[in-house]
Image 1 (cartoon, rainbow, N blue to C red):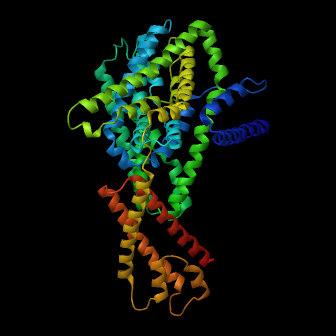
Image 2 (tube, one colour):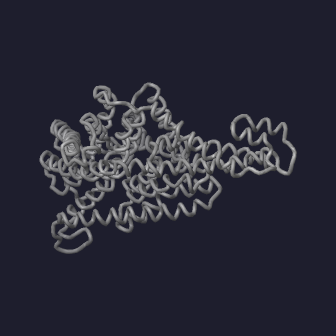
Length: 540
């Protein structure tokens, strides 16, 4: 028992060490870390003595997916998602449905002895893009901000559509193989489109509703917590609190996690202390880094088991190559065709749609950024044992994940060739300065309201200059009932509260870009944290 425990710990530590080392080295030499991790995992898997790795879909679906989605959601701007909701819905719902049909029909035509239900199930497996990989690539490239928002919003929300479609296809597979429905009813009839639509609506309504309920309850609780440790502890369990009950209620756990994350991220400046916000951001960035990269290493390590199943049930080497090429081509083409279609609708459709459209170049860039990852890996192993060609479909899903990762590696080249305009960093920095000045104006107005006759003028002068005061105050503590540092902290906190209120008001009015809002809020949090640290040291 002791040896087994030590062995498990050694493997976990090895996973972390390899993940950190490979990711750091990849960043230094400019390579795509997900691709390198897959390759390293595949190479290591063939070393004698390395134990075989088998994918546990429930572990990925219930263990890894919720925190990965939540980490991405709390960093995503709710205001930006709301502003681009039409484009995001076209991709997260429309594109997923189109991909399920296009890839499903292709698989039905080229994969031997596969049923239409199994083919559509495979289409649902490979339809959703990976939030982690897309965010990583979007972060490295200087893509237009609108394009980044659409890509991130799509990858956050399309998992729900794909999983609903997969559940419907699995029900059809079970019914075809047993003569009963997935619930055990005899003489099952083919699933109707209306039944699938009803299941989708229920999943969306329950998932979104439960996400708001979880977000609202946790926001009320966390507002009363003043300890960053307690606040972060609640944050760490939030994705599971949202995901698991929503799934049990036949809703979309994915949507519940995303909605809860977006809601809590939006409310963070109001419900959390500055220290709690900074601690939560650092913790989730670390968790996301370890989980997302470990998943790609895990994909590579699972290659031998996937290959073994494909060789045992597949049609042979050359047919497998041609089938893999056809599936990959259908995945890429379905995304490209849909993007060109939606771009045309925006540009040549109703007049009210045209201002919200994107250019042809943006459409091409979005079509290239269709990277698959953890959801595809987990979903393909959810296919029931009676699925025709199950092992071969698992291999094809692996091919799609690796193929789209390689395709994503060419995205920088495509972006350069398209000559997409980079973000206007000068404009963004200008907005940061303008919003900061606006916030400081409100802070100074609050200072004038708080002043009374007993306040030392040195405090007021330094509050107005807001620099170099604390060292001088510690050397010359002044006279009176209240030390200068305490007076400074009290009044500066009041000013900070006014500044934060002004920034949040500007956000609600939509007068600044979200990046400027977040940058100014971060600056305010840093200063408030410094005040907290100074107070803690003074109390010791």
